[in-house]
Length: 231
Image 1 (cartoon, one colour):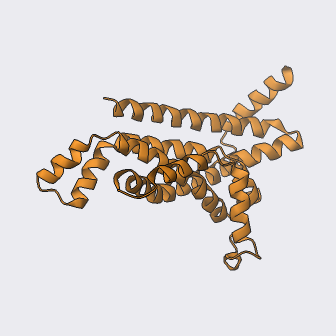
Image 2: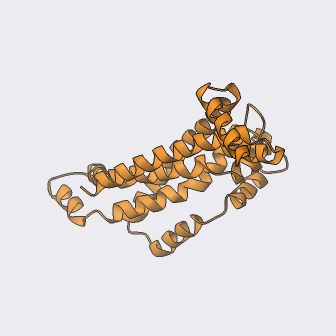
């Protein structure tokens, strides 16, 4: 018990004193997570809207496929992306492997289906009378889309927040595609795994505290947005 208490107190000291190694890891994690979430949102939100609002064949099958992809293990996605960006892969000439960009690519594949699926759910809940009323008042297709998106904005924001929480805490993709290189591709989760393997728990506990704080903030935002959406 005393070992845990000592590690916990030392971890708090690292956070309070702004330990350079600790915050370098946090910076890398936040950078790749924010960029991957932004890219996935740019692709996932229009995709989800098109599936929900458009009259496409096999809509149920597409939605089922997206929902299936939500449960896909991160190591499977990491292996899939690795096959394409390794030196012998199709995109090997770009030297993406073991870089932050490789992690971003993998994380985009991870959360794009999540954002699309949650966008579908948000848009599907909007009453059809909104679009009909907009068209009756002379709105064109783009203006009608904007009306629907405005009504579904809280659900879509919740989708993006949920996606960020998913990538900031994942480890499989970051480890397989980033290589856990110190000061370059080492994220909070991969650093925690490394410190655990080394038997050095102080930094691991400190990173755990930071990660839990970020997760708490994301959940507070998620609940706030969901609450606003039900008003």
